[in-house]
Amino acid sequence: MEPLDARSARSRDGGPSFSLGSRVLRAFWSASWLLLARWTPPPFHGWRVLVLKCFGAKLGPNCRVHASANIWWPGNLSCGSGVLIGPGAIIYNQGQVTIGDRAVISQRAHLCASTHDIEDPHFQLVLAPIDIGPSCWVAAEAFVGPKVSMAAGSVLAARGALFADTEEWTVYSGNPAAAFKARARQAGAGSDR
Image (cartoon, rainbow, N blue to C red):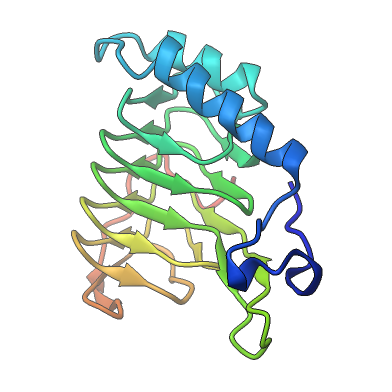
């Protein structure tokens, strides 16, 4: 889904940011998640993964997605194996979101893969992909901003706000997040995707 030109769509004045076709697809997706997955009990991860895959998500084996997770568009989500997307997590993936093997997106964490061009008087929507590396952890209620790449094993502590790329096996905290301490490398967890 590509955003419309803000000049002609007049999105700053309340016009749409996406085409009618895109909005219809998203409405169908939202209704489908509500009817097929939102109400399911916690152990039904496999069913929810199947629903996401039907809408274009690329999910590796043993992914777990909680029913209360809010995913803007499954077609813009790619996850490796063993990924966990926790309760109430917001994956605002107007742009692509890639999550590496064994990464954890905790409860009510927020990944935002779009922004606006603040220099443009029409406030053009800009897609800005996020890359969460393998063995990363985005802790409870933390925020990962547009165009951020979290290197393998890095951690964003609870309620942190990350707007820049991270170093491998480093813990970040605060708003804006800054390196806090090194994290011990896990056995068998390399930096490869």
